Length: 80
Image (cartoon, rainbow, N blue to C red; front, side, top):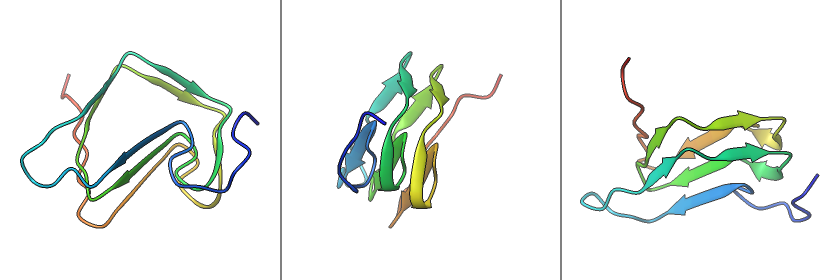
């Protein structure tokens, strides 16, 4: 595992963006991360656009080995 601490969103963490800012997580390889929640991606009070990523072999102690979102988080993904 590449992430030693039990944090939130060990691969990518998006926090507290509010309702007007938009982060984009695009064309990444997010692998072999370990966190308490959201091993690959953790979204807290943020709604990023998540597109064309490889998210694999991530683990979480509690929830969301790949992606975990909470507290007013509504991530988007394009429809194909």
